[in-house]
Length: 111
Length: 114
Image (cartoon, rainbow over all chains, first blue to last red; front, side):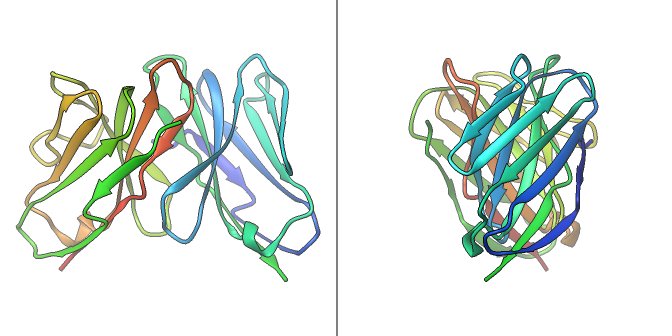
């Protein structure tokens, strides 16, 4: 079963704008990981945030984690057309160590 | 980090046949996993591939349909048996490196069953 939900399911923005994607999860996690997938290809790991962290940055990416609300957000600043892809969050469950995925957000950045 | 390769990258198969997908990691890993991604959907965990013992399957997946081997720390195979069109999906191998937390993914195997 899926870990949780992501919203929005689809997001369309103009180049240069910021994109925010949200993820909610159901079970207790050790960490939460964000991935990008271009058009049905393999997953590219973007960033990992541990359960004892609240915010993390990597280049144009900013991830937040709120364990009390079981939610996370991914912010991409100054978006580019090349950021067009599907974005998935995935939580590492504390029991069993499996990594389970959210539904994903399809981001389209228009030039 | 880890680089994961899969073979084949894609295949078209006839109903009732079987296909074995190979996964090779370029470094030693602790855990290896197999996922399925049906068209337009997210990833679903099929099983955890355990070295030297039977894989651990998730609810809805069984060994007879998806036999998995993991003879050493860096190699695993997934077989999709007695295929039907419903098995048309992308199958992805995944691994966590020794001492690490990040889970890496292979490029996937696109399977079309006619």
